[in-house]
Image: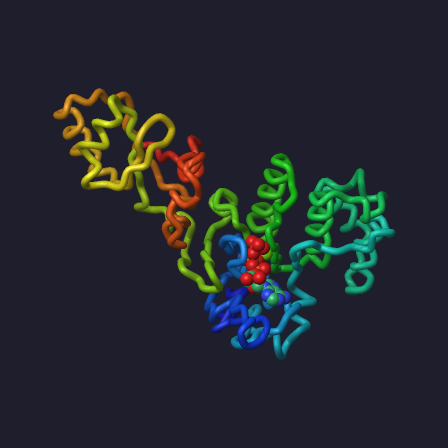
Length: 329
Ligand SMILES: Nc1ncnc2c1ncn2[C@@H]1O[C@H](COP(=O)(O)OP(=O)(O)OP(=O)(O)O)[C@@H](O)[C@H]1O
Ligand SMILES: [Mg+2]
């Protein structure tokens, strides 16, 4: 049903500049976001995330294609944006000489949805209540980001569009933001579309994800499905050179966390272990774990892990977090 669809992007494209200086920021994107979920828009810097979000919010005009919100083309029905959508774009701007609270009041009055009580509730929820009386010009990046989120939610929108919502937030702020975003969807029944270049973020908060690279969507699906079957084996053994000698011809090996990691299905584990034992290699630990979205992303965007620099690359590909491991049932 059309009402179940919050966002539809149809062949959406944006080209900046002319002739030789053309930048094809977004290249014919097709995407459907159904209501009541957290949808992630994941991509590296310059992938076209902000450009797409600006087109969804009608801040810039597409070069080609259309944006439909709740089944209606925004070209013909701008009121739907005002009535049902709230957005936080990169570098949210506020009146520097007004306090945070007064900025929200102004936004509310201008938009026709001023509600003093709601402003206080939101200031509390984004952790800005005690700083709301200060001039917004003096806010830090993280504080501006929090106020921006409150501003996006002021009209109590059904659809919340957030461009890199955790930008500038400290670790505690990131955690709060995640919980808050889930609450918007799980308890308030809203739909959240957020962009991020952080895999861990998308992995932890999103239900579905589209991966965008160089203006094109290269993967789309449920976060859980995209990761299903993407398993890897982490082996701690001695000597590691022996492991390389035995498995190197058949698998692509990565040295990390005092061991070796390779992409392999869980079913291959016994056979791999047998081979190692037969070659007198002492095995201390073998763990089958889910590939992180990060490793998946590097694969999907065609950027190999090695190109990220050898220092710390292994760690970023497979964080030693217990969350990434799937316990055997
Ligand atoms: N106003 C503009 N004029 C010219 N080029 C632009 C403009 N806005 C964006 N671009 C270009 O479009 C491409 C996509 O930019 P965009 O800001 O959408 O990327 P992004 O995915 O949001 O990246 P980031 O993670 O760094 O925020 C980039 O090559 C960028 O330089
Ligand atoms: Mg951006």
